[in-house]
Each structure stands twice: as structure tokens, then as C-alpha cells.
Image 1 (cartoon, rainbow over the protein chains, first blue to last red):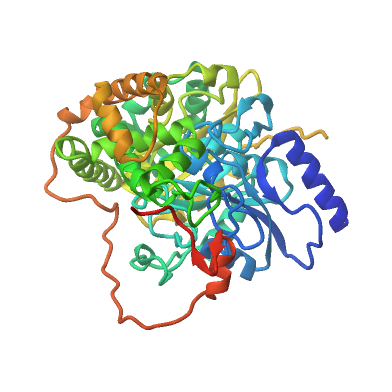
Image 2: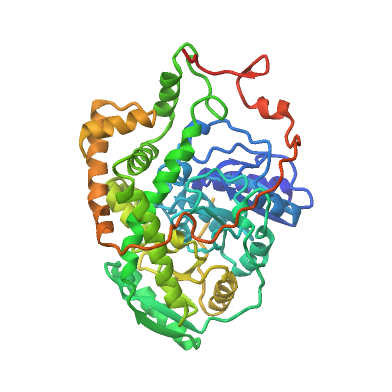
Length: 442
Length: 90
């Protein structure tokens, strides 16, 4: 296919699925060894970077995020910046200031969030990898809803330099693809120490030894309240894992129930401070009335350009850090993070991974999403949040399809720095599970 | 949540709320915090989980360098005679 044909197809696909905020519309692909896309909260020189927020509309960074620079150095061509919930604030990519990506299996349903555009791109583009970012589930959720694999490495494995922060102690850059071999190939390329991100500098080397998984723990708490179609596919997957020689043991992890509130308190506390920099002076939107006093000037921008969920999370995070409430919420959440990490470490003494369904239901329709309360929406993340709070690597594998043909995923969580066992699991699983490609018609 | 508290939080966060929004966010935050009350039952921990992994201090001597040309940095800003514009302070 010629470059012009490839780019024309890209444009048509984007028209249908709205997966990109900005993308390669013309020009040449040159001698690129592979094409990739990146979530729109990763800076890139050649495209706008808005992190799904109108307040950053028109922002053109002058440098590439380390993860993007490394893929370019490996011969990759960045073809688009993928749509997402504003600053990562959402489970369905419906909180973007720039349209909503559509699920490739059913256009009336969500791609999941917040890396929804990345999952969509990975699902519909040929031989494609997409960089996503996970703070509380933003890679595994959309991977599950769009039927792709998705790997989230340990916190600190991939440099966050060039990532527009949501929650500094939670953000992790990973990869989505329908081909697990691509994840095994490219994760070591984007991983590694980077002096621009000190949290990346303590990591041991990522070695791919193809260590096979022998035993998984399934928390009983994680299969309560799961939709029937998801549970059926998950139980079938457990039988398949057993036939692969993997021991499956049900366990109790009562600490998991504390992860959700702890996560939202830490994430919104950090987000509310990170977003304090957006005041209409240095990035994106800057046309304001300069005769106003600085309080009124800043307030006018933030009121006009932040979306509903961004405001809700800023308010929540500001509140939980305030004097008088800080000990009950923020300080307690920090302790709970360690309680959850200890619970995982205990499991990893006996098992290679903790396994759960990835999401409690298949991708919902937009009509149903619009009727969800904030608490109902947050609760949808209860399976993906614990590993993100703990900073442990995790993986979504497609494991079934319901009667409507919607994908269902399962999530493996391994110990810090043990991405190898997850990547190998994905490749082994892919040998015996047939991943369905979405039917893409233009 | 009490609307007066939400109004105080919004002011600190530089967000202006209409009466309708104040009503909405007061209810939402009240519902969310009610759900978060389960944290009161959670066990305590002696440590401090600022980060999920142990993060070493990576300190170095300051070395002056021009990583980015200032013209490029300013290119995306609405500047006035190469100064960043801002609202009045007083």
C-alpha cells in the first residue's frame, strides 16, 4: 500500500471511530519500520498535545516524551495522538473535549478509558502498537473493552518525562496491541533509566527470559458482583489455564476493598495540584482579559475550559488535602497503599500472579454511561485500581466474547519488576485463544 | 456535603460554580465521601506510601545548560516583547 493510501485509510478510519485527536494527514511515511500512535497526554513535537482537555487546545510541545523518542529511534513513525478522557479522568473516554472514540465492535458502545483511542487504534489498525497511560486502569480497561492485549509495567519502569501528569505516584506508560509479541518486542525499548525522571532510576534491567507462569491466585472478592457473561468467560478461561498446566487457587484478599477509595483520594489529591498550572498563561488557551486581577483571570480560564469531571476531581482532591480532613483521607490513603502492596506480596510468595476479570461488565452503551452517577462510574474500576495503587505490573488478555460479540478480558497482576512473566503469559495464551479482530468496514 | 464547604474548596481551586453546579457537586462529593467511609475500617500501616516503590534520591550538582532555546519555549505563548503576559497583580 502506498503512503498516500495508508494515510487515506487512516483518515477514513478516524472519521468512523474518532480515535485520534491529531494525526498524520499527509506527507510521507518514509522508511519507517513500524507505525505507532500515542495517547494524547504524551508530548510530541509534530502534533498538538491536549490530554483531552480544551484548556490545552492548540498546545504544541517542543520536545518528544522519552517513550515516544525511544520508539522513533527504533525506527517507528508516530502517526497519531489518541483521544482520551480529559487528563485521564474517566473510565469510558466520554470525558474528552475532542469527541468520543467509538468501540470497533459496536459503535454505540465505549472504547473504555481513559486510553480509549489507543485501544481503538490497536484494534482497527494493522500491525499497530499504541502507547497508553494507566493511572487507575486506563490501559487494561480499554484493552478489555476493545479486545486487545495491554501491558502496564511496574511504576517507574518507563520514564514519565514528557507525560502530562495526572497522579505522579500512579502514572505508568504501557503498550496496547492485538499481538503480544509486539509488546514483548517494544516494552524493553521504551523501558529503562532516564535521568529526566528520577523514579525510573531505581529499576532493575528488564530481561525477557520467557519465564512461564505456573500458578495464579484468584481472589474470591474479585468475582463477586461480576456480570454473568463476564463470569462465564472468566471461568472458561480458568479451565483453559488449568489445561495449560497452570495451577489456579481461590484465595481471600479482603484488603482489595480499600483500594478504590485510597486510589481516588491519592489520584485526585495529586491531580488537583498538577492542574494548578493551567491558568491561561503558558500552555494552550491564553486569550483572556488581562485587565482582570490574577485571581479572577485564573478562575475565568479554569471555569471556562475544564470539563465537568475535571472540576469534580479537582474539588475532591483539594478537599481531601485540606487542613482538618487531610489525616482522615490523604494520610490514611497513603497507609492503605502499603496495606494493599503487602497483600499482593503475600500472594506472590505462593503464586506468580493474581488473576481477576479485568472489568465487571462488557463495554456499556453511551446511553447507559450517561445515566451513571460518579460513584457508579468509579466503582467500575474496582478490579483495575488495586494493581495501579500498588504500582505492580499487570496485563489484559482477551478471554472471551459475549452473545453480542463484545470482548471480555482477564487481568494478571505480577510482582514489581516481573513484567517478563506477564509478557510470556500473553504469548502463551495467544497460542491457544483466538483473538477476534473487529470487522472494520469503511 | 455542605455547600459552604464546597464553595470554599472551589474558591481555593480557582473554579467558579453556579448555584446549580454548587448543588450538583455538593451531592456528588457527599455521595463519594460516603462511599469512601470504608477507609475508616482499613488497617493502619507504619510506613508512608508516597510512592509504590522505593524511590532513591537522585541528586546531582547543578550544571547550567540551555536545553531548549528560549525562542522555541516562547513560541507557543502569547508574549509581549518576549515577556510572558499575565494579569495584573494589584
